[in-house]
Image (cartoon, rainbow, N blue to C red):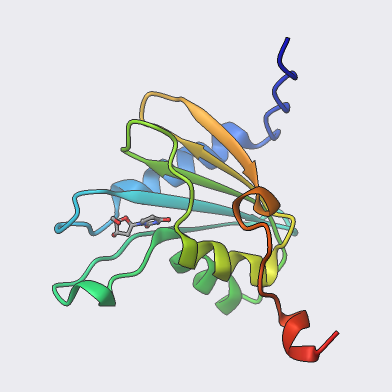
Length: 141
Ligand code: THU
């Protein structure tokens, strides 16, 4: 028998709805892969982001990094949960660059990703980025 699934976060439905709202505002005319992120912060606020692409392709930014930048600009650096919404067939994990940006602030972050038809997967940051490069390396500890 497989282990029982972790219980959903009490604010799961709200965060999924906010991630989907952000996804609907994504600007993704080149990939047509829209992504929305809802970042729950330790003080209970939710900061959202969506991917914003650009005609100069590498200038585009992912939903997760948009959410992190917005949260930090609001003085919120303590993240409790990230919920992602995409239109992919399977729940999509954050890309490598977003994992690196997230781990800077939240090495124990739980990440939930949902599809349009409501399938969800949950990962820990440690699962997604097992040997992270963190600020501690620069401090030499
Ligand atoms: N994308 C994200 O927003 N987050 C990810 O973690 C994966 C990729 C965006 C970037 C680009 O706009 C589109 O999805 C296709 O790669």
